[in-house]
Image (cartoon, rainbow, N blue to C red; front, side):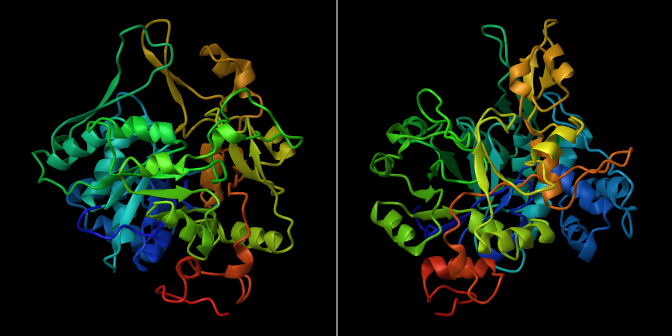
Length: 483
């Protein structure tokens, strides 16, 4: 990256809300790349305002939004002074659609602005935002909001971000942008696009914005080479992610084989060809089980700029995890009793997904069986072509009869968890239903926890700066780990 020093450590963007602004700000303050998760920020903003905006941070950020009337409309709609009663359901937010309403787009723009603004406040370190290519319907408005706040990097995985370079160019120039949207069962030659025009927000042509750098999160050298071959699809760098990373994993290449614990088995074909990625001439970072100073050194020796780390930051003090859940996992990990398994069918996306097996969470088979199948957030819904030619939306985690009525296979629904509601509940913002049912949390982590003894020498807690200090050594800024 000409003219600037590439970060040695990228703090992974973990949704929903695990990589919040507090965590990203703490990492960026050390000079490394702090990353907020851009997934479901509209719902998080609305629910935090309904909780009373403890500390006034959201309202402070809203005071800096460049269109005050838009910020005020959202405050009028969602802010509850003192917070709404605990037994009262949260007010819903608009669900993603190919033809979004004006309010939904405003909410997405503002929510992403607020998260990035707070992450960048009080320091001059770099801040990024992480999105999922899978959630295409959210992307243009969300990215624009982050750019309004001056985001430095956009990171995108869960698919190939082939159109994102052009999207960033258009949004930086303040001109109308379009993004192609994949629609299941679309007719041959049929194209679907999501339109976003910044002038709808401002009422006039906005000022140009600084274009952030794009890092594509890929799982193979082949995918990296495909993106790098054409300047229209070429990102500014790559995060090369192995199956050891938390959250979603790439499917194993070849026929699916499961271990005795029901986990996908990866083989030689799934190994990352680091040398091939290095030959592309773009900066890259290794991700998945990289929380170790020796692995950072090895990554650099192999040509990488550094590493991306997630799980160690997910368990640190500034993490967005519900504090009780975080402390519980640290205690279990200290006793070697924390179980993380890679499930082949848990995610409605069809990709393997790592679940922490905590009693009382949606990973518990009985909790999963007892949960009514609601789909009221819908971030992972897939657009599909209905028989009448219109676009509908479906998700394997929704009620089975609804999914089948929409043309889905009943086999896809078996074991499928509602990640949207479960992950939002994991940061303490789970929905309470009118009948009193409270959404249970669902927790994901990576499976390599060997770093924890090095980070908990002071006791049972540590900070984001401690993670950076451990990785970079005694000269790293921030809190130091005693020998």
